[in-house]
Image (tube, rainbow, N blue to C red; front, side):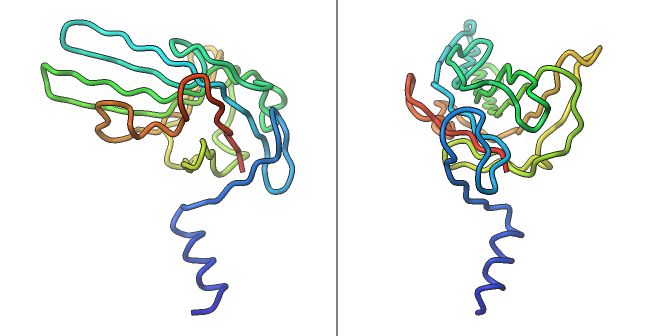
Length: 165
C-alpha cells in the first residue's frame, strides 16, 4: 500500500496526531493555538446522582495558560473541561467535553482540538451561542463513563496540553 494511500486513510478516519508547540497561546508548526491546562477536579450531586468535572473552568477550578484564543482574536477561554454524570435512579451514565470561549464565534477556523492524546473533531461537536452572544460553546457528547476513566485530562494538578489544529 502506498504511503499516500495510508496517509489518506488516516486523514479520513478523523484520527489526528498533534505536536506540542510549547506553553500557552502558542501556534507553531500546523498548530493554531496551544493551551496547557493545570487540571482541577470537583464532584457534587445528590442522593442518586453524582456529577464530576475535570479540567479548567467553572466547577473544576484548575487553570489554563494563557487562556486566550489565537483563533478568535484573543477571546478568553473560560472553560475546557470533561464532565461525567451517574444517575443511579435511572441507571444512566453520561459524559462530555466542553469548550467555552467568551463572545459570539462562528463554528469555523479550526479542525481538531487534541486534549492530551485524544482528538476531538470540531464538526462532531454541538455548537451553540449563548443568548446575547456572551459565550460560544462546543460540546462533544461521550458514552457511559461512571468513574471518569475516559477523561482526556491527566491527574489532578497535572498539566495537559490542548492543541487546536
